[in-house]
Length: 335
Image 1 (cartoon, rainbow, N blue to C red):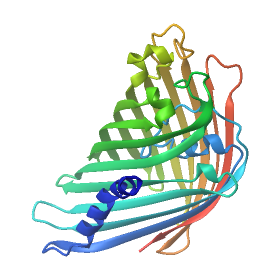
Image 2 (image 1 turned 180 degrees about the vertical axis):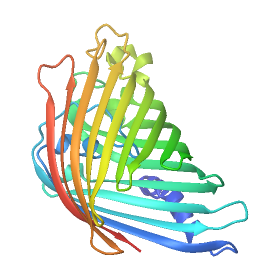
Image 3 (image 1 turned 180 degrees about the horizontal axis):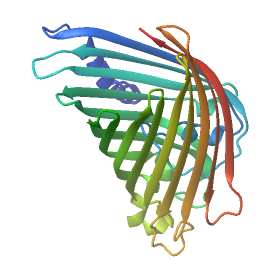
Image 4 (image 1 turned 120 degrees about the vertical axis):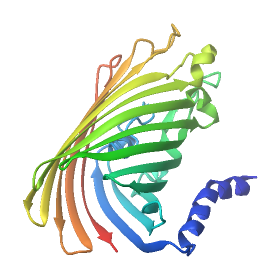
């Protein structure tokens, strides 16, 4: 049974590879992108969540309770394969993406994510995009399992699925607006099943070219999550929540080939548990994160990147905050 389950995880990916390889009567070209980054982080427990605090990733990550797990060097390989089709109703692009994080010493945190997107272009500078994200068996730490009589310390893992619909349009020559909706679920391993959560998100983004070479991006997401614990009071834990997420980025081209991006993210997760013995009742979590990235275009196919990121998160029922500092460098390759 285990072998069958493992294969089923990748059936969708196999099917889409076959679609991309298929040579139909209306197709134009392939696109390949590869990326490699090397990170140094001072807390592996928060590293993955900090890297996905982004408009186009998965900013509302699972609750992280086990922190200060130590520093490490992390290697990130990523690849995307796309194909542009040109049917009579407008250009359409299909893309597959795979990304991995490989930890030097804390190998239990190794994981990968997989994505599929389909983008349909329309007249009047508009497009419709469908995205699917799959993140299997992400290790969150060794945590207290409330489903065991003695609340034993056990491995906590979560698998995330979500689908996103985005509508994007240029409202002015230098301003693009995007609206999105997404729906998904986070499924935990057996010892933490009361944390299983279904969630939906509404968001809007705007990209403004203030001046040639200067671009400002702002975005907002509202999310509602409903956890199974709300109907299982015996486990005294309901992680249902609503979330407000705000991001702002400023990208400046300092030379024709070199740009600097400054980013700031804020997120507040407010828990809605009505279980009197649940520590999450009347609780919230606030997350602040800032980063600076230098990108240099070496030639038409290679970009080089250096960056620094600092993030902090804190529950209102805890006296201390969790802080993570990460630096990295890497390259991106286009074909």
